[in-house]
Amino acid sequence: MSADKRKAKRRQVGTRAWVDFGPGGRPQACFVKDMSDMGARLALVTPGLAPREFVLQFAPDGSVGRRCQVRWQRGKELGVQFIARLLKGRRADVGMLEC
Image (cartoon, rainbow, N blue to C red):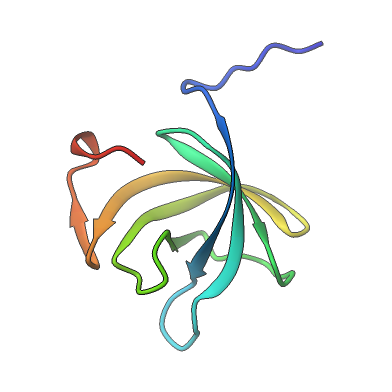
């Protein structure tokens, strides 16, 4: 059995969120399967290649989210690293908020 080499411990979440892939598209529903302070594993509802960076929204109105960078993608699942926290659509200091 291989050891987990992640820098932060992942916790099971199983909650709904939304991915916003950028201008010209509507946010799409997804599920957060597990998450740490540094990243998450997501399951997309519709298959397709995710862009390198996008916004993961935790609130339906987009007021709370994280800017993400894709680390890997296998089918509908993808692993992302959080690169910025967003509150009410504005960037917030990463060190000041909990996920």
